[in-house]
Length: 106
Image (cartoon, rainbow, N blue to C red; front, side):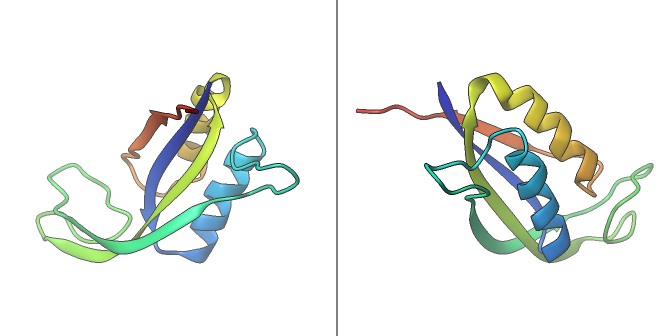
C-alpha cells in the first residue's frame, strides 16, 4: 500500500534537502525513473517554547513566528517506520510531526 506523508521543517534549504534525501534512500518520492520527488509548501509557523524546551529557533516564554516548509512525499507503507526514524535523525526540531495518509487508486 502506498502512503503520502507530510512533514514540517524550517524553511532552510539544507534541512529540506536532508529530509528529502534520507526519505528517498528508503524509497520515498519515487515515480518511475524519477527520485527525490517532493512537493513543498512554504508558509509561516507559530509557537511558544515552554519551560524546559530547547528550541531550534526562538526563546522560552516568547512567541515566535518563522518561515516553515511542508514537505509531501509518497512511500510504501512497509518503509514508513524507517522513514520516520531517518527524518528524526536529521530534523532540527525537538518534536517532529509526520503525518501519513493512505493513497487509494480508483
